[in-house]
Each structure stands twice: as C-alpha cells, then as structure tokens.
Amino acid sequence: MSNAGRGADAKLGRIMVPKSYEVLADRLRQTILDGALAEGARLPTERELVSQTGLSRGSVREALRKLEVEGLVKTKLGRLGGIIVSRPGNDAMAHFVTQFVRGRQLTLRTVQEARETLEPSLAQMAAERRTQADLEKMSNFHAELVDAIGDREQFAAINIDWHNAVAAASRNELLSAFLYSISYDVALSTISEEYDTEEVRQEVVKAHSRIFAAIEAGDGAAAFRRMQRHVAKTRFLTKAREDGDLPTD
Image 1 (tube, rainbow, N blue to C red):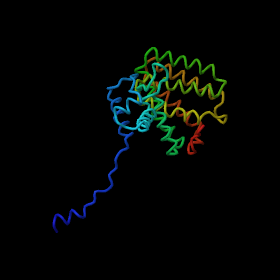
Image 2: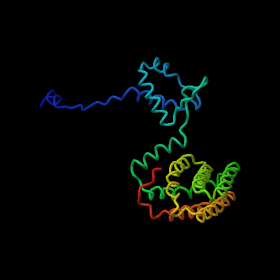
Image 3: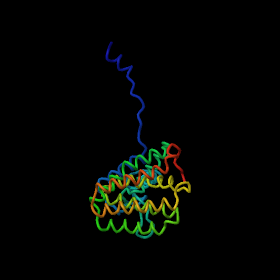
Image 4: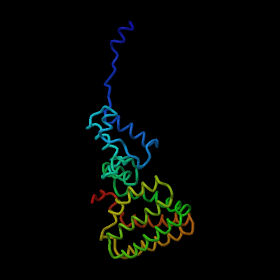
C-alpha cells in the first residue's frame, strides 16, 4: 500500500480550542501564583485589560470572576479600590472542599474519619510549635466556651474556633486549612438536642482543658492522645447518624 493510501485513512480527531477568558485567567493565575504580582497589588482595570489583551469586556469579566471564585483576586470599592490580588485563604479551600463533600454526597462517617485522622496530629504539632500568642488565643476561646456552655449554638461556634486555633498553632497551613474546611460539617452534625446536652458540653470543656495543658507543656505525645480520645468520643455520640446524609443548613 502506498503512503498516500495510508494518509487518506488518518483521522486527526476533534481539536478543542480553549475559550479566550480561560486563556486570560490561566495567564493571570500563573502570574499571581509565581509571585510576580504581590498580595495587595492592583490589577489593571477592566478597560485596561481589554486594551492590553484585545479581548472583549465580557471575556475579561469572566476571567476575573473565575479568579475571584478561586480566591486569587477581590474587588475593592472606593477611590483606592480596584481589582486586588489576594492569596487563597481558608475560605477559598473550604468552598471547594464543601462542594466536593456535598457533590459526592459523602456521609458523616467519611468526614469524621478524616477528622479522627487529622486532629490528633495537628494537636501534636501544635504542642511542638506553638507560640505564646497561640496559647493566648486558645485560652481566650476556652474562656468564651465556658461562658457559652448554656447556649448550644454559640458553644458550637466557639468550639470550632478553638479547634481551628489548635490547628493553626501546628504551623501546617495545608492541614489546618483542610480541618477548617470540614469543621462546619462536623459542627452541624453534633449540634442536636439528641446528644448535645449541657452535660456533654461540660465534658468537652474538660477535654479541651486537658489538651491545652499538654500543648502548653510542649508534650506532643500527650496532646496527640488526648485529642484522639476527645474526637473519638465526639464521633461515638454521632455514630447512629454516620451513614446518613450530612445536614445542609
């Protein structure tokens, strides 16, 4: 068979051309993540980006909207405002983790298993790396927790803050951001008259005191064990609901 004959049978397949706003978003994203644009720097205005790129205003706006969802830019109003470069924070990660959890219809069991795996190690690292400022933050949240012991919803909110303060003291931004991302779902699952009684909240306060003492003493092994017991006990309280859907509000 001739080369010409074989060439006639070749099939190239469909060629996918990226949309113009995706190309601009990719270019701006790379510039920000590479550090060429520092956090707090202002991007060119929409009009300037249209002029510089030759794209339509609609494409420029769509690219900026995409980056805003990713937490890489934010719009600041006022005379000194504009499109400001930002670094992805805990809220940006929480947005995508929550979408994954809800979109995959993950159960409470999955979230609790992640928490049980994560939190003891974060407590251990916190004991080894915490600063005086970290200890003060944990102590302040603990005092607020004690004051809120009669208010179920307020107690749950401050409880999240305390656990996230421990995680932040670990100095592992990735793991602490992930805990932040799942902490809301955990709280929703435990704030119920069924088992969230004042007696249970008293036990939580005692557990936090023991964990804090280990962190303050710099005893990583004790902090790991005490946090492990604490989250395991919390999981035991919600065991009956583990295979059901996570609450959504």
